[in-house]
Length: 132
Image 1 (tube, one colour):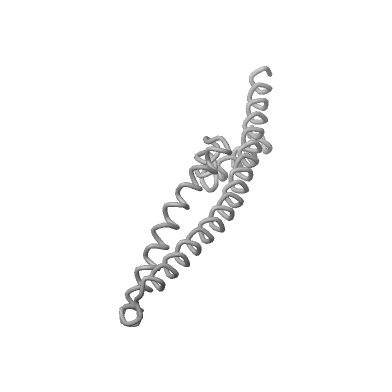
Image 2: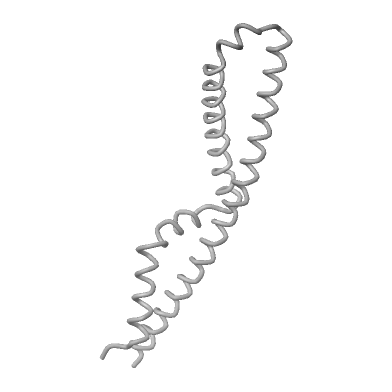
């Protein structure tokens, strides 16, 4: 005879494994600090690449006026502005990434705990059936 609780629990666990479970298992395999650090390093790299592309495009778009009015002072001011803007963008993206990655890791760990609790409940149901 089929046990409705067991079937419901198994269905719920299987759905979790197919949808969120794969990603949650990958995320929860890392310590929280390691996961956040990995995402932060990736953010730093992609922010640097993106900022470099933006600077290149702005430089190409304004090439004519830059070459007409180029002096040492103008060059130093533009370089200082570019560096300050880069550092500001980097700080903002790092803070946002740390907040998002920390929340994502926390949520994945909570879902994995619920999943593991469901597996334990299923194991107890099987043990109870085997005793009878």
